[in-house]
Length: 278
Length: 337
Ligand SMILES: Nc1ncnc2c1ncn2[C@@H]1O[C@H](COP(=O)(O)OP(=O)(O)OP(=O)(O)O)[C@@H](O)[C@H]1O
Ligand SMILES: Nc1ncnc2c1ncn2[C@@H]1O[C@H](COP(=O)(O)OP(=O)(O)OP(=O)(O)O)[C@@H](O)[C@H]1O
Ligand SMILES: [Mg+2]
Ligand SMILES: [Mg+2]
Image (cartoon, rainbow over all chains, first blue to last red):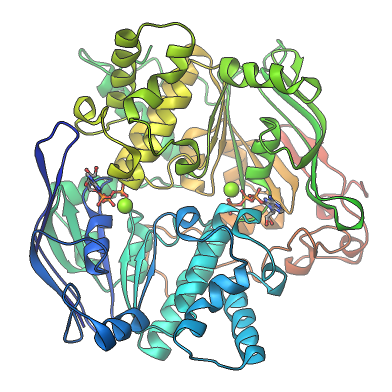
């Protein structure tokens, strides 16, 4: 369904040199599948997403969605891509237009694509979507600034789900959510996947969440995919040092265990050449 | 276990006889006027001592960020009442000008939304160094210091990136830039609102270890707002749980995790996905938290509480203190507030 082949991308750095950010990325999302992309901060996850959405042009390689070449599409093909593939961006503050009410933000896609011409039906749909993400109709007339971080993230998800996409491309969609709301949103995404055969490209740094929701996962390290496969295998039993290091740093909700780990870390760091902060 | 200065340090510092650095009493925050006014934060009291790390947790929309913004008096549309003492000075009573000076000098703040504190047209190096430049530190010295802090926060190729602009940074790098801006002025109090949400676990661990060391070694008082109970377990001495604008439970970190008293805290701890377990459905607390417009009478949690009694639907429970714990719940007795 989504095929990323041989994708490479570099940027010009402030010093004027060229820095390669992605190198020969291959990644596939099949219909009805939730595929994860994980990797440390700065490894290139958001850049993959921007290229997959056609927002950034790769130096080489291709992105195709259901037979559409994303970087060459025009006219009706581009329209279909925009209708069937919906993004949820990493930064919910920047991606929601501050001048629009929540109702407008969520029903915009329905109006643009003329999916629900009847205003009352559109309104019902907005309420339904808000409730699915744990908000309610009282949110509709308000602007994004009157919402908390996690509420904005959920407004962005409701907006993406509004027109019934076939593929959702999400960049850290639940990072600002507490465990309870996070569980609700994850259960919602899984339900949509099962019921509507929704496919999801899920970018996140929380490996526990990724293991829970994704059947397949790829690990990105400095712009290169270093490991990929079934998420239970990659995230459960990987012997790859980078993946293990990521797994070992997942915080454990147990104060005694957490303290033991920190003591071990800081004693290593306190040895000569340590990391004292002054 | 290895013998380190940290290994012997008490997890919970002995009670501080000196006045706490940050002392908040009866803080309430409302928006709007007259009948349209809505109370977002209700009668919140807590204290953070020098070198202490206190976590403020709670569901999305519970009022954590509004509390932080009110402490810093950042939103002119908020009506703030109560007392906020920092080093003996009541911030609520300061003039706007005095408040601005105080903000730069003794309090560092990391916002939940990093982009709101970054100027898109100014280089990262200049933004991080700005606090020091305003204090008259030379450009070269301020730049060297900025580089050092960014290095400590594990920003890759930091020297080269000083000349870059925010849009050239990844989400997690921007978040670290904002932390660097808050730390570089060496504040006494740090208020950090979800400072590591955009970070992968390794960088997150690094950033929290750094904050931990600064707090231990320099006595920085930290109020950490987070929704991640894993972070709380590893970082905080004490935890405050907020629900619908009120603090409903407060305790030292170990007893809070070992024996949460409020049914809401119990639910919060039950909904954590564990990397070492795979469950079919994540457990979530049934229902949704009320909005500031739809808070039910009595205990605000009662419609979602499996243990709710008659009185829970009528009276708001008083805060009861037993040992290190404070809890506002009728199950634990104490009558109404
Ligand atoms: N417009 C740009 N100009 C220059 N460099 C850029 C630009 N966009 C991204 N980069 C660089 O590309 C690298 C990858 O960035 P990207 O945003 O893809 O990372 P990420 O994996 O999403 O990280 P995070 O988890 O922190 O969001 C980083 O080193 C970043 O600084
Ligand atoms: N400027 C505002 N005007 C009106 N209501 C607001 C405003 N800012 C926040 N609120 C409301 O106040 C409540 C508390 O918001 P706050 O941002 O403090 O939540 P939070 O606990 O930080 O949540 P999150 O974990 O999602 O960031 C929310 O219901 C929100 O809708
Ligand atoms: Mg990113
Ligand atoms: Mg918040």
